[in-house]
Length: 336
Image 1: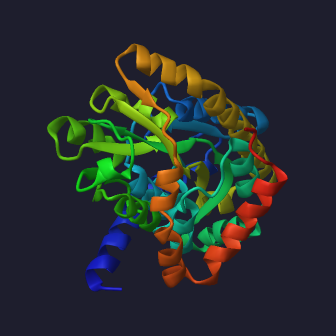
Image 2: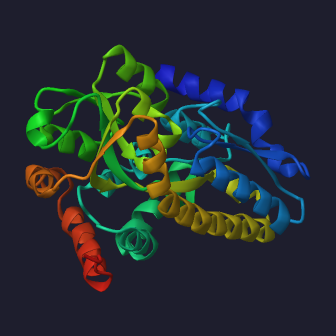
């Protein structure tokens, strides 16, 4: 570690020492940051989580929720979690991959086809259990997996097939798999924080972005990129994490309260996102969005090189995760 890096970490730790002690004070607020807007499912779920934490801890713990990236964007929120400046955040699995590189594989294309398959994969896969537990040594603990949905495109122009992607600039978040998927489709990927995407599309820096319907709706990306193409190329849930240093300061009783609240809020979030999707699409369509449900065979074919590219860098972990997903696709087949 460089002297500059040690100095920055020491200064950050000192600056955050006071907030890091707040769990010792009865009723003091724990800070929860996320980047969804005030009307998104993430915020509703976070509010429920906060209420349940207070209820199950008998008022010993309070959670203050900050939406819309008021405190930090997704990568910075995870960093603050490590340093103790935040107690909770909820973000895409790929965001945690900066701290456990194997989690990039969570964004392999077309791992699952339905919500039920996705829920079972994250809840029962030995691969996910192992890789999530590895984050504890990095200063964060995954409490439960909340929902965002399947990633699809919003673009300024129609996206009927991968041929329409060729040479176009597409916003992505920093994740190997997402970048490789975009390159396989023909896009030129551009990394931007989600909080900067609306303006970037508006100004022509990129021609669109890819995110789940719930995020497209809550961030209003359809206003500047009205062509919504439901490729559903990646299942993209959002694990809820807690600062490990905060977890260690809690009593066993309060750990149980926080975990119970996280799991209950996860169930609510999953139901909320799945049930709201069609209504959100209809509302966006009523406001000028153009919804396309393409034959995704061409998209599936175009992204096949991603699997071999992943094997070249991640080895046997790729086939272990693919095997877990295949078992669940067979056990929980999609309805035609």
